[in-house]
View 1 (cartoon, rainbow, N blue to C red):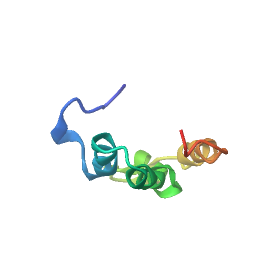
View 2: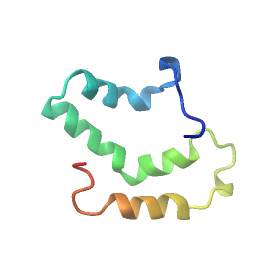
View 3: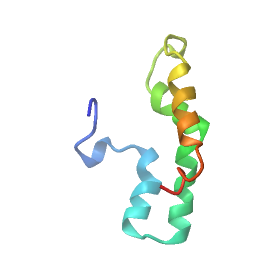
View 4: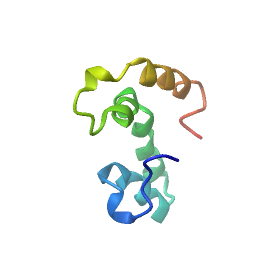
Length: 76
């Protein structure tokens, strides 16, 4: 893993729904995770903190999103 956080302070608000699910495996918290596989969030993974987003090829998130959109992936 590159540029990964090994400390709680490094986990931004993006991680809040995941932390909630870790604490309580309710159906409500599980469904809240579905937004994490949307096109907006997939693009965010590549562009968050980037000063010039035009320098990041959209092929990255478009390809990843196509794979994420396969049937059954959201449930995984």
